[in-house]
Length: 112
Length: 114
Image (cartoon, rainbow over the protein chains, first blue to last red):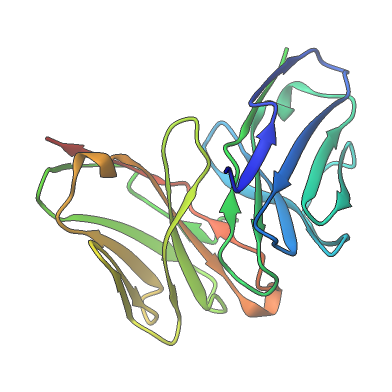
């Protein structure tokens, strides 16, 4: 069983479109995250959710919005996609107050 | 401003020898450090961690050393195996900014030559 899963694995879309990436974890963790890995391979946190509350929101455009229907899921919605949004997006989860985060396989987003 | 740095983008080592991956950080408030391993087209996988109250942590072939005065940590892999070939990320966290806020380095690509 995959501990942290993401769908889709690849996403190719046009500028201006709205898209979503789904993430699910079956580890029973309380906190979930979204990271962006840019073309320079720099992995940077975007959001985290703990018990349905946003606890980290770095300098991310408001076109990006996380949605958590329950503590096992944290989906990433992106509106009005731009070329610079092309990157690999990773979902992760951790037990509350634990430093160790477990990552999903990533979603490669390409905006044309 | 990148608070965690891995200055060597790549490293090649012969099978059976020791691999040493280095990581430097600037924030003296960091108190927990982790190493992640990443294969192509996969997410980072947790490898080993160390708290700032220790200077060494060992798990099988993997040992992490922490030098707080130098703000430096290193990952030693011995003996290196071809399956260790991957990108290794160093990460750090500070309790004051929240236990879950990890800062990552840009990674070092390790190639173990058979």
